[in-house]
Image (cartoon, rainbow, N blue to C red):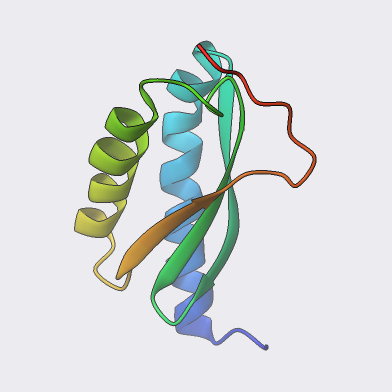
Length: 91
């Protein structure tokens, strides 16, 4: 699907915000990457130590998700995915 200029601007805002917070996520051994933004749904991929981390809900659902949705009004929901071939980190 071809992106409109307004969609590109929203995606640029999302990526800019993700770039700002990556340092903190990377510092703990994890990462978060943009996957897609379609019909108000933002999909992000988590990798590294974030997968299976006991703090996932606090960091992502109560942190990143709420912050993104409050900063960028076009985001209606944020979903998180993991790479298909992932080794789980169970703590």
